[in-house]
Amino acid sequence: MSKLAYEKPVISKITAGVPNKFGLPVKQKIISEIDGIPVSELIKDYGSPVFVISEKTVRGTFAEARQAFETRYPKVQFAWSYKTNYLDAVCSIFHSEGSWAEVVSGFEFEKALLLGVNGSNIIFNGPEKSEEDLTLAINHDACIHIDHFDELYLLIETTRKLDKKARVAIRVNLDAGIYPIWDRFGFNYENGEAWNAINRIMLAENLDLIGLHTHIGTYIMASSAYAVAATKLSNLFMATYRKFDHWIKYIDLGGGFASKNTLKGAYMPGAETCPSFDEYAEAISNAIISSEIPHENLPVLFLETGRALIDDAGYLLTTVLANKRSNSGRRTMVIDAGVNLLFTSFWYNLGIYPAKEASDYSEETTIYGPLCMNIDVIREAINFPHVQTGDRLVIERVGAYNMTQWMQFITYRPNVVLIDSEGKTHVIRKKEDIETFKSFESNPKK
Ligand SMILES: *Cc1c(COP(=O)(O)O)cnc(C)c1O
View 1 (cartoon, rainbow, N blue to C red):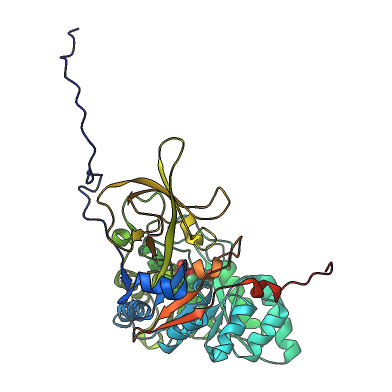
View 2 (view 1 turned 120 degrees about the vertical axis):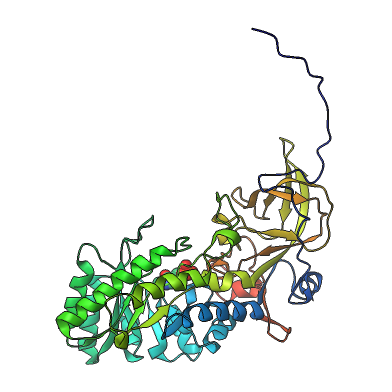
C-alpha cells in the first residue's frame, strides 16, 4: 500500500458568508419598522418586550384566503377560531370582515356574545360543554358541534328541560391519509360511529341536524388530506339525504392550514413549503363539487382557519440583555422575552432579526429568554450577527396561539399593541402590574 502524498496544512480565517446547505447567505435581514413605525419608537412608547399586531396584515391575509375560496366555491363562510387569538380587537377585525365566531368553551362563547356576534353565528366546538354552556348555546340558537355520545345525551336532556330545539352538527374524525390521525375528538367515520350519531340525532325530536364538521389536525402540509376529508363528509351528507330526505346545510372543514413558520426539524423554511390558500381551496372545492352532491343542494363551506390567518400579523419586539460564552465556547445571548410568552417556540424555529444593521460577522448562537429556568430557550441554534446589549430584536410570525397560551410566570405579561390600518397605534391589552395580582389574591394571614 502506497503512502498518501503529504499536504501542507493551512490555517484559513472563517469569514462571514460561509456557504451553508442553501448556498451563500444573503445579507442578514433586518426588521427596523412595522407598518412604517420604527421598532425603536414602539419600544420607547410601549416598553420591551411588546407584542405588535398589524391590522393591515390581518386584513390582507384574510382577503387572500377569502379570494382563494370564493373564486372556487359558491358559498363560503369563515369562522374565526377564538383560541388562536381571542384578543377583542383581533376578533373584531375578523368579524368586521364577515367571519363568524368559532369557540371551544363557555368563556369564549361569552366573549363572542360581548363582541356583539349574533348567537346563531357562533359555532360551539370542543369536548367540554357543561349543561350550563349548552343552555347558553341553545338559548342563543348557536351551532352546537357535538363531540361525543355523552354530550349528545346531555344535549337531548337539556333541550327537553328547556323545551327548545337545538341546531347541531357532529364533529367527525377520519383517516385523511396523514399521520397522526386525530381520533380523540368527535365520532369516527370509518367504524360507523359518525353515521350512528347522525341516526340518533335524526331520531331526537329537539335536534335539527344542520352541519357536518371535521378538524383533521393542525399545520397540515398536504392539501390532499382536505380532499379526503371533504369526500368523506360529502358521503355522510348524501347518506343523510338518502335515508332521511334531509339536506344538511353546511360542511365545516375546520382549520389546520399551515402558517409560514418553520417547524423544528424541517429541512426547508416553512414559507417555501407550506401550501398556499389556493392549493387548499382547490383540493377542498374539487372534492365537494365533484362528489355526488347535486349542485343545487351544495352545502355552505365553513372554514375555521386559525394560525394561517394571524401568524404573520404578529411580532414580538425584544431587547438583548446579555452576550455570553458558554463553557464550551459557544456564543449565547439572553433576551428579555421568554418561552412564557412564546409557546410556539416549542414547535417552531421562530425567525429572529435585529432591528438595525448589525455586524457582518455572524456566528451560531443560542438565544435564551430571561426566565430563571433551564428550558427557557427561544432558539437552540441560529446563525446570528453580533449585536450589543440593549439592541432591539424582532421575532416574527407570532400572531397565533402565543397571546392565548402565554403564561404569567416570574414576570408580567407585556403590552399588546395594534397598528391599525391608518398606521395609528393602540394598546389592545395592557401590561400586567402588581395591581393585577392584588385584585385576584386574598391573604388570610395578613
Ligand atoms: C384550534 C382549532 C381550529 C384552528 O386551528 P388552526 O390549526 O389554528 O387553523 C379550528 N377548529 C377547531 C375545532 C380547533 O380546535
